[in-house]
Length: 227
Image (cartoon, rainbow, N blue to C red):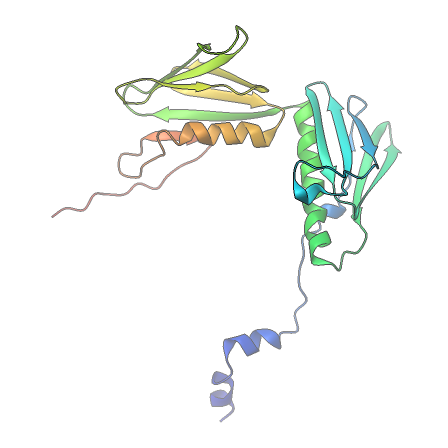
């Protein structure tokens, strides 16, 4: 009799009466360490005319290093605490009220963005791209449309014409092999955004496993249907 009663309880009700505690990511609590070659300046002045509406009343964090600088908007409820420890500086991120969903979500996000910025201005980011296909080739040449300092990526991808792409400022592109492209830059978002713009010209296809692969990307092989 008891077994039949349990079976009639809807799944949604079973979830509601669960006594297990919710588990949240604690990445935001982890401190960030950085050396003397990195300089951080936190401007507490609220942003009143932001480029994006979500940055209204945010403060500004400027991170400078050997490879450049990043400027990050910091939400007004996010607190940054700087300390010195064994010669290196340490940054701790916290929020005003961790019980608020938006603040809890931005806690870990802010910490991750700052960590990426530190890595970008000190080590940089590298994204390799592989061209897999008969006759697929890539070269880097001076731009036909910009000034002498601009470069463009030329690719032969099986079309009747070569594919030409302007390389954005802040990204370094090289071709150590005819079928391999290496992108480097201090902003991981810009580097990966350009990498996937390149990938759009020939997305990997599963039957012959040809196309443009970003990083260690793989694709499961499919067999064609036989009639």
